[in-house]
Length: 226
Image 1 (cartoon, rainbow, N blue to C red):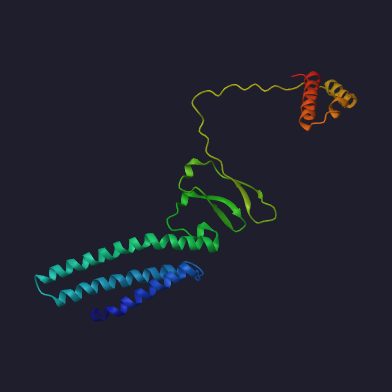
Image 2: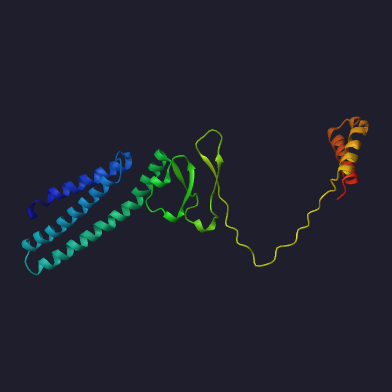
């Protein structure tokens, strides 16, 4: 077994290639098979590591043996570090490809914060991944609005979280017009009997609009008092 580590290495490389194809083409129906393959890959790595140490222990004598065993641990660390660097390039590419073919961010997670995903349905078959998922605390709870036209997508209202200031808000006075029936009848009588010939006789549109606006404003202020 210890002398046939190349076979285990080939199996490990085949698992890696299979996982790459599964990530790119997404032909696996669920994650169960992928978890089993990950467990198998970890088991094979452990067997290879233990047997490599055994091979080097039997192949070298003191003091070279100690150096070789230390070098094995160092080589494994360098391999893990190199894989991490490759992941910085490969991982965004796979995620971007997934988003293009599925348009569902919850199926393309790598390091997405689970607390940053909204529970609001953005369509009939999926939830909404917040467009600013790195700062979920800046937004109030999302609100689901009616669907847009005839599509399956819901409109979602995302509002910033309003933090009330310490100071007392200014008092706003809202003025209302007198809309008693007698006042409304008076305004209706005026607007139906008024002679607009002075407005219609003007040639320029801007002058006509200004005179119409000023005349109507004066009548509203006179008949419908504030």
